[in-house]
Image: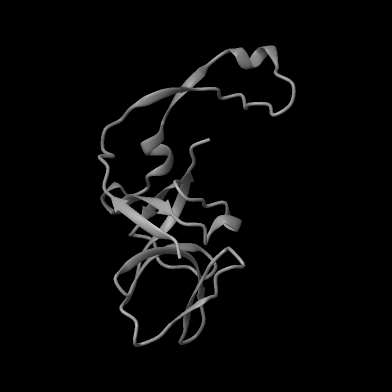
Length: 141
């Protein structure tokens, strides 16, 4: 199971950083790519609703096939409605976890993206809450 360390960051402060707006080649470098153009505010780029947005640090490998690895930072928006097939942060039986939602008529499944983990069927016996939807993953390389 992936366990998350959830925390709040100050996201109301604008901070513009330089950005290469022409695109970055993954092949041979272009001489035109030497010029920085414009700027970007990561808060405006990634935060839709600052009052409902939180960050969570991933611990574990159950979502590795979705590109979410231990140490990654998730951007979580609590104001978004849960959507079948999307990745959510859930609170189940006292722990935060990140899983892909499978919403059927009367059943919710939490699906890992790692073949070593079985799907979790949410039942009436579980203490359960879909805490927020994952909108982005920030990775350290």
